[in-house]
Length: 356
Ligand code: UT7
Image 1 (cartoon, rainbow, N blue to C red):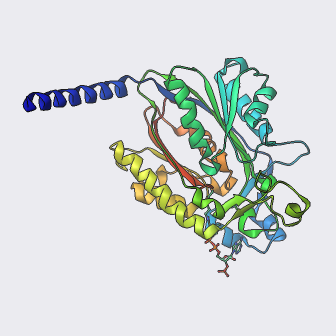
Image 2 (cartoon, rainbow, N blue to C red; image 1 turned 30 degrees about the horizontal axis):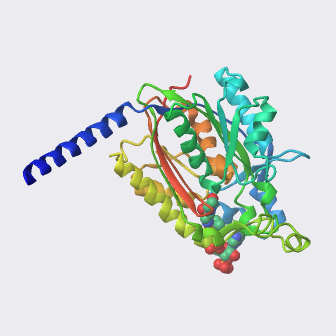
């Protein structure tokens, strides 16, 4: 009798493994099938920042890798305007109408207003109502969270076309008297289209992590339900991003490298197998450490921090946009990010198309 039970147990185990593997092989994958970005015209250089705060080009370049960033200037312009431009360009490129979108997700920490969501406003500007839309707030990891969420709607068969936008007007929450933060951030937006794929390419795996004990080191003190806006919060300059850079740096270096190595390991990838690392652009030193841990040479790392600085949720899709023409169908790509919260994560995907 005990032998029969143990044989049944073993058979059951094999059956489950077989079913899991066949599900994994046959599962509907979501792939990025297009990407487009938008950057405001105004270029804020290190030299201009030298006139505003006690800093210098040499310090900024050696500590961060940043030379310039873009700033959205103009009355009445907000995150949704940049998101709108990115999605409009994406739809034109893909020859699609706004009504072809089933769902639009926007990752941002600088929404136009607390509500309605920026995704909702982008849809309105596109003329895409009544498309479903919502925002995701996960700071610099926001795009990875939004991409993963969008992919699940495709994988489950609920939707066929999901647009994921990463957009931030960081200049709206930056104190240009604080040299610790104003040299880092910039404005920008980029959007990707997710569609079902039958050819085995697409988003294969993701790891999303968070730890709220990191909140004191990177946050905006006022403007939420904890400390609503008041004369005091404005006088104390509490409506700006605060960062304890040194502490965030220590966590970022470790967590972004760890999570990138973890996603490679569990997908049996070596440095040779990975065609590109698409890292969140917070600091060149953090990116270099992650690439080293993954066993990647510099030429496999997308880096545009020099020109755009840290655009928070937009950094990763902006890299994909900048590098789109070099990407080939089947390329193994790892996206990785670390940001406020703390939040961090990695996504492993196989690129779906060759760009013309
Ligand atoms: O994207 C979201 C996640 N964010 C990140 O991943 C950012 C992580 N942190 C960083 O990238 C870096 O910590 C910073 C770039 C923010 C700062 O670089 P650091 O090498 O960590 O500098 P530090 O904060 O340790 O400051 C070193 C020195 C200090 O002077 P003392 O105390 O040594 O005399 C600062 O006061 O540099 C001074 N400093 C500056 N000097 C010139 C700080 N900011 C500046 C500045 N220009 N802008």
